[in-house]
Image 1 (cartoon, rainbow, N blue to C red):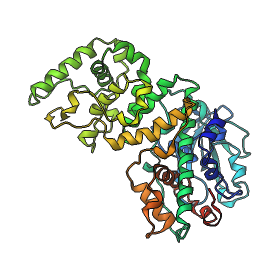
Image 2 (image 1 turned 180 degrees about the vertical axis):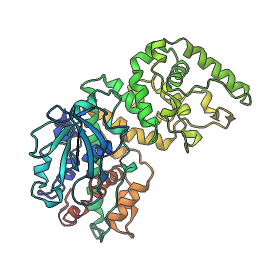
Image 3 (image 1 turned 120 degrees about the horizontal axis):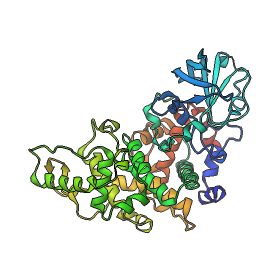
Image 4 (image 1 turned 135 degrees about the horizontal axis):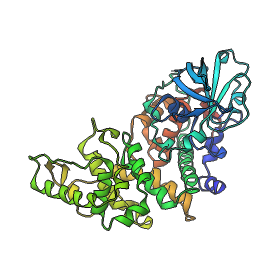
Length: 450
C-alpha cells in the first residue's frame, strides 16, 4: 500500500529527499508509519487537552506532568524546565525535555555531544524503543490509543508558539519554472502524507467510516474539528444510517448528540423556526438513553467569534446530507456544495431567515476535495489521479508568508497559482519555516531538477 502511494505521488520523493542527501529530516517520517511531524507531538505535549492524563515511562513508572516546560523556539531542547512526578512515591524530577518520533532521533540529530542538551532529563517519543542513558523516556503511542476520539489531525499547528526566521530569501533568483516544479513536488508530498494517514486508519476501520470522520472534521473548520470528529466517532456512519431514515432525521440526531439542540426556543424566533425545532425534538426523544448519555455539552464547542454561516448547527445539516451520499457521488467534486432544499438554505441563524445561502461554500468544498477526497481516493482506489485538475483553494496567510520568506517581496504569484503549488507552500511552511530549517533550502536553488 505505502509503495503504491509513493508511486501515485511520484514527485513527492524528490521533495522528501530535499535535494540534499545529508539533510536531517524531521517532518515527513511517513515510511516509519508516523505520517505526522515532531511538531505535532510538541503541540500535543504542550496542551493538556490533548496530552494523555495517564503517562508512563519506558520502565512502567507513572509520570504526572506538573509543568510541561517552557517552549523553546531556538536551538536546543524542545522545552526548558519541565517538572514531572515520577513513580508511586511521586519523586519530583525537573529538567529540559526533548521530543522525537523514534528514540533513535536523539542520536540521529547529534544531541548526545551537544552542550545545549546537558540539562535534558526527559525524552518524550511516540514509539517505544531503546532508551537513552540518563533520560527518562516517555512513549506516547499506547497512551494515545486508549482515546478513540483522538487524532493528530485535530491539532492546529499554527495555534501554538512559533517564529518565522528572517534572512535574505534563500530561493531569491531561482528560475520561476523550477520554483513551480519544486513547489508542486512539495504539494504531492503533502497529499501523499494525507493519503498515508487515511490508509493507516483504514487498517482498523471501514473505509466509509474513515471518510465520515474526515468529512465531519472538515465541516468543523479550524475551531471545531475535534468535537465534529468526536461526534463521528460516537455515532459511526453505519449506526447513523441504521437509526435515521432521512437527512432531516439524521440532522436531528446529530444536533441532539452535539448538545446544541435548543431546549427552549426564544419566543421571538419565527414560527417556522419553532416548528422545525419541534420536529427535531420529536426525532431526538426517540433515541436510546445510551446514545443520549454520550451527548456533548455546549461547552465542548468553540462558538465565540464564529460567523453565523459557519456555525456548527448549520454545518451539521451538511453532515446529515453527506451521510446519505455514496462515495461515488462524493467523488463528483463539483457537487460537494450542492444540497437539496432544507431549513438552513433559507436561514442564517435560528432567528434570521435570509436569501438562499450555501451550507458549504465552494471554497470549503474545494478544500474538502484536495485535503480529503483526493487522498482518500489514492488510499482506496486504483483509478488514476489527475492532480492537474485539482480545484485551486484561495490564498491564505500561510501561503503568502511562505512565498515571501522563500522568494522575497517582489516575487510573482504566478509560480504558485496551481493547487499543487499552494499545497506545497503549506508543506514547506511546516517543514522548514516554523522548524527553523530555512538554511537547508539554499542548495535547492542550484540543484533542484524536479
